[in-house]
Image (cartoon, rainbow, N blue to C red; front, side, top):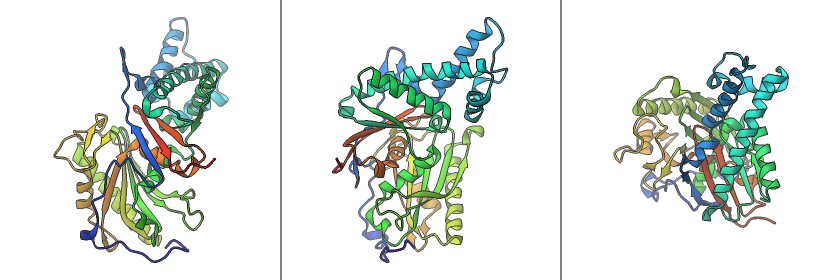
Length: 361
C-alpha cells in the first residue's frame, strides 16, 4: 500500500456516477483539442511527419544514390532498418552511410516544422508555449535529432516555442498518462493501476506505480511491469486483440499480487481516434485491426467482461485518445506553462493540446 496514504476503498459498484470516457475537463488540465485532421491537396498534413513518412524519405535518398552507384546502407529495405540500427550508423557507420541518415533527418525535420506551424495556426493551438514530441520515432537518436532540428527551424523562423522530446520512453508514456484519467479515490489506499495502450502495430499493457510515497504530484509515477504484443505481425481480428489484451491484464494482476502491489479496480486505456463519452470510437481507428468504430462494439464493457473484478471490487475502465494519454504523462512537468501540446510520431501523427490549471509562473 502507498505509504502515508489513508486506507480507502471505492464504494459499491452501484453507487458510482458513470465514468466519462474521452473527457475534456480533467483534474490537472483541460484538453482543448485532439486528433485534429488537417488536410491539403495531397491528403492529411500529419502524414508528412509520421514514422512512415520518415521511412519514405530515407528510401527516397537511397533511390537517388542507387541511380549513380551503390547504396551506402546496403540491401536491407528501409522499412527493416530498425531505429537501433540507424542510431548505430549515425554513431559508428561509414561517413557516407551516416550522411544518408542525416539527410533523411534534415528533410523529415523540415516536414515536422512545417506541420507544427500548421497546428499552431489552429484556434485551439493559439498561445501554445511548448510542444512535447512522443511516439515511436522519439525513442531513438534519429528521432531526437529530428525534433531538435525542427525546433531550431521553428525558432529561426520567428516561432518562440519549445519543441522537446517526451520525458518518458514512448512505450511507457502511453501507460503512465492513464493515471491522470483516474478518479480521486484511486490515489488513496492503492499503489498502482492497470493501463493499456492500443496502437496500430502494438498493444502494450502495464502496471503503473503511482509513486505517491516519493512525490504527491505523480511526478514519480513509473511502469512497474509491462507486456507488449506486436499484433501487426499476426493480422488478428478485433475480438482476438481484445482477448489478448485481457489476457495480458490478467497476467499483470497476478504479477502485482505476487509483488504485493495494491491495484485499484481501475484500467486506463489509450487508443487512436475520437473517443465518445460512452467509450465508442467515432473516427480515427482505421489503423487498428478490424472495425473498432462499430456502434455495436464497446471496448470498455468487453474488458470488464473478461476482467470483472480487480481485488474485491468491480473493474472500471476509462478510455481516451492515445496522443492525449501520452501528453498526460507530462502533466507534472508542464506546470510552468499555461498552454502546451503533444505530437506523437507513430503510424500516423497524433496530436493534442492542453491548458494547465493554475500554471505556475
